[in-house]
Image 1: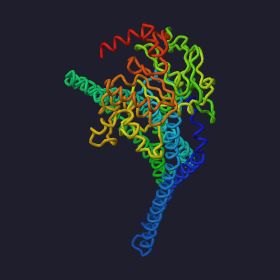
Image 2: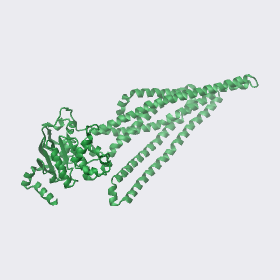
Image 3: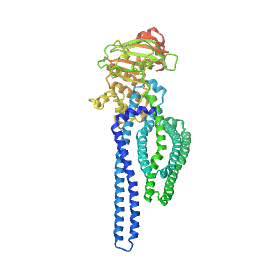
Image 4: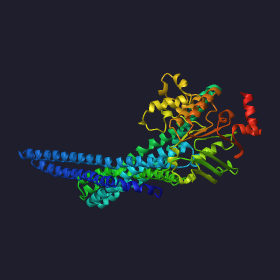
Length: 594
């Protein structure tokens, strides 16, 4: 239960619903006990009047007694029906308070987890897979909700029912009460054991279902590759094996499920038989009345589900505790990158890297070593280097997706960690190397990051697409900008995805534009068109262009060449060609290839 203490704040938040729920549970059970007493009184009265009815046999008074017995039956029948209606009304209110409260907590908890996920650094996402993140915010939260709603409701219901019913039973006859109650603990224990098996097998089914879902998702996402290699039959066989495993686990659960209700009915029937058998003997001995036996049968029925639910509820609590423990592991993970609040920030002068070094977690060789450069506002810096030279690491550090291991990143002379990173990023347009497309329209993918009520949004989308040399490609689609790109942009080519990413960066009209090797999939003609457009757009803007192609960086104001995380050359295009070193070799090789 220790892990579930995290939920106490939600119980306090919705304390009014919780308290009302307890009151409604109590009222509902109170009106469940009254009918049993009414039935006892009715049966005893009928029994007494039947003796009188026989006594007046053959006289006119017999009809009077007959009508009196009929009136008693009708009165108590209506009374029992009234109690049932009132009980049902309070049960409705009980669910409207406790179950609805659980839905509110589920909503709040999911938002809490999602907001916490948003604040965690990239290192967290490197260590945890997406499936696990999804599982904790969906399945685990669902199990926790079952504790807050049904489990808590059953616990309160069980407590109140046992107190009221036992008080009523022991006030009638202690001996019969003890005998009648003997099978109920066995019922609770048996159901607890069966539920434990059911939960274990349910978890196995859920695990296999996750595997099955992942398999199908990968098969559909990678359908192009599968068709290209003609492995459809192999994929079908693998899917059949996975579904066979799911089928076997489901059948295993179905066999245990089949035992559940028969077991419950059997043990409940034992209590009823004991009530009638022992109660009948006590009636013969004059210790109780027939009405008491009927009353006890109803009490046993009232106790059956609460006692049976004890095992079910224990299982719900165990599963919720395990799920909340998993949730707490992530909620207790603190973001190692904190952002200060600085409403007055505005980029005005320069970006400075001062002896910056960075080593990824779990690695010994640094990705960057003592990298230093200055990018004045309104100038373009180009970073050239081969794969793994540290180009993208520079961008991630500048966007503060992670903090430097050593050195400083300064914005207008102020350390990046002392700046409100949200305010800084609001002035940055970023086209990443790994383009991600949302399963939405091209227009929405371009305008991602802008509010839907942004003035002249449509014209800004078209302008950004034109500057990214994307208009002609969009015109080829039947629905134009309203074309849905599919999951991860499956309907777009690699070059089209990159141009959508560039348009997404340009539409913000940013003060700082970062292009991280985002022209690698476009042809030289399109690359030239985009670069010419960027020249016009970045006259008074700061730009950082990262590439492994000389053609993308040759017009920059300043170029640095990276190798193994270190700056090996720097200067302008002409000066680097004049030096005749690595940059010159790259230039000659790529020009020859072209």
